[in-house]
Amino acid sequence: MKLNNKLQPLLIAIQFLSSIPVGKMPMPKEQDIGASLTYYPLVGVGLGLLLSVSALILMSVFESTLSAAILLAIWVYLTGALHIDGLADCADAWIGGLGSKQRTLALMKDPTSGPFAIIVLILVMLIKYTAIEALLSMPWVQQSYYLVFILPLVLSRMSAMILFATTPYARKSGLGKAISEHLSNNAVWLVSCVVLLLASLMLRWQLLPVMLLGSVGFLYLRSLMLRRIDGCTGDTAGALIELTEVLILLGLLISIGQVL
Image (cartoon, rainbow, N blue to C red; front, side):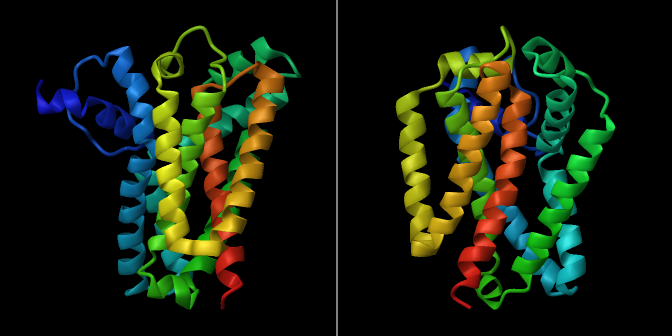
């Protein structure tokens, strides 16, 4: 078996979760699409390392306010604004769907963004920017070479991985359908345990506020999906990632602030 074939699930995950080029790939098999799910946290590690290095460079040149703005722009660029697009689609669909599953699913496919989507994106980006700026200003974060920025990227993608493993897919077809039908539940939970173990070694007891906020957010958003569309879609997974990133950043501010 060629090396490229072995790496196919990882390349699919990179392509699905970021704007990082992976070259020309053959049409993926549904089994590879399902297997790509367990690589989501690893993609988060890669993106988080790129952000950490970017933060280190930026803070050596600029102060925290400008560094946070540029770092947020890099964050959006690296993820291709894919999750932001999912959040915008969900914001419009949940308001315009008027409680109807079919109308909500139809609106999520609409490429245009309404005023509510724009308002939600502005508020989320404002909170995200402010949280990044606050973290960049903390001595403990600076002493750790800004590696704490790995956690929001990893844990949010782990939440998307768990979402697909525990929630039915709401559409009859699509990329998420292949993921749902060919994922390995055992692999999902094994990867999740490894991620949490490594995160606990990094933050120790300070991980508790982070996990509390992330878990409450996950359960609440998943319940919204089940009540409205009886499952999840690629857009709702993107919205979950984007909102979980914000919650993890806020959790880090709480936990790190307690030791300063």
